[in-house]
Image (cartoon, rainbow, N blue to C red; front, top):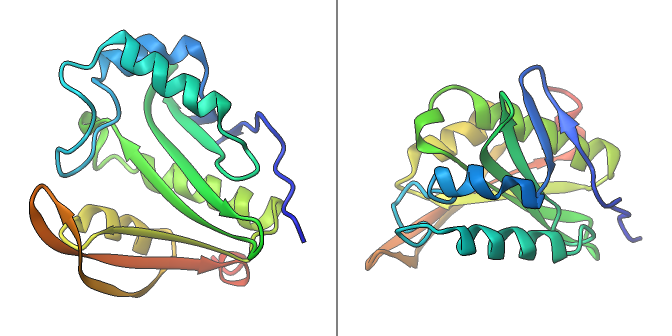
Amino acid sequence: MAVIIPDGVALSTSRLELRPFEFRDVEDIVSMGGFPTWDGSGPPSPYMKRHAEKLIAQKILDSWETNPSFVIVLDGVVVGSIGMTVNQSYETAEIGYTLQREHWGNGIIPEALKAVLSWALRDLGLAKVSAQADIRNERSWKVMDKVGMTREGISRSDHVIHNVRTGMVWYSILREEFGKL
């Protein structure tokens, strides 16, 4: 059974707007220096308008059937993003997120993640959503714990990030588990 994902889905929480990427986001993304990664491997530096335009164009062109992706808007300004890679055959997805560093620790990612998980598991009917993070990225796996995801395990020494061999921690949540939160 195919999961039907409508284009242009927008979600909201008490303080966040989650919507598809738009070209009007260029200046916000440039001013934040692109979307950061916890390990510093993030976007080019200096981050220029052409980088943001290319990123947004790709996000707009990506199919929502397999790669729905939202910007996270706080007080009218893009501060992060959250997106999924959907496996239509298995009705599953892997989710990932990023947030401007100055907003870390303010509960924005758990709030956005809960909204997108609700949409994915309830509205779309996905059976499972998973996520992974570098095992050294304790902040990220604490977010996954906070939203009710279950740690499935750790893959050992299978990634190299900044020339350091590391493992990944895997989390997931099932449709029936999300309904109990």
